[in-house]
Amino acid sequence: MKERGSLSLFAVLICLGLGWGLTIPLGKVAVSEGYRHFGLIFWQQVIGIVLLGAVTLARRRRLPLGMAQLRLYLVVAVIGTVLPNSASFTAAIHLPAGVISIIMSLIPMLAFPIALALGNERFAWRRLAGLLLGLLGVLILVVPGASLPNRAMVAFVPLSLAAAALYALEGNVVARWGTQGADAVQVLLGASLIGAVLVLPLALATGQFIDPRPPWGLPDLALVASSCVHAAVYATYVWLVGRAGSVFAAQVSYIVTAAGVGWAMALLGERYPGGVWIAMAVLLCGVFLVQPRPKGGLVAAPRDARL
Image (cartoon, rainbow, N blue to C red; front, side, top):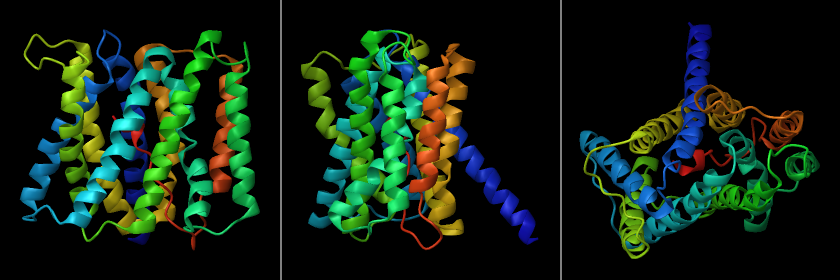
């Protein structure tokens, strides 16, 4: 029975990684015909509100709305959605989805120095070595002619790096100051509500607002699909952490990276030179070294370029 339970948890882990990895090429599709970040982020938040709101109602729980919770929702909305999603969607216009998937594997590595600065973690040489391997993997990606098919793409790699750093910061902020009595679903719902309020005027002012009326094209379907997948996998990730522990759940990082590359090849027809595969191998080795051991802390969960 115990073996069956372990196999079931591994199956959930694989499904999580496949789902999160899928959201990255879906983001590439969403920006393929002119949609831009503020419009996409707004509807992403609205879809999240509908789904997470339904879950909250089904659980018969209220959304905490004290000042401490509102500050938390605001911080998560800004550093976990508005800023990194703006960077990610812009990068998706110019970078292959597979390359973005590989860069997203830096989240747990970038979380380490932030955790040290905030006092969330203690220094470990093994984890420093993992961080250095991550930086080496990025260098392999940006070496002219080695990995990226177009040298002009190098200019947009920092956008993906910035998104990964912001997700790492978000995880550390929550780890340092807690969720103020709200559970993960409530935090994400509150952040989605505030994120929608923040982004709507920006979408209107910049002309990026997306008219929701039909006819709907492939980018619209990609946005809806990625938003639904994200809400489902994030809630499942929280369940998995509670059931199997944070160290087990953190292994999803490997699957997200591999799945993102695989989905990009299958759905978008992307193909990569040898340098990309070398960079991916180096980065995954870095992830292995940075991941906490059974007595370690919680690694920041990958957020799918927050799609």
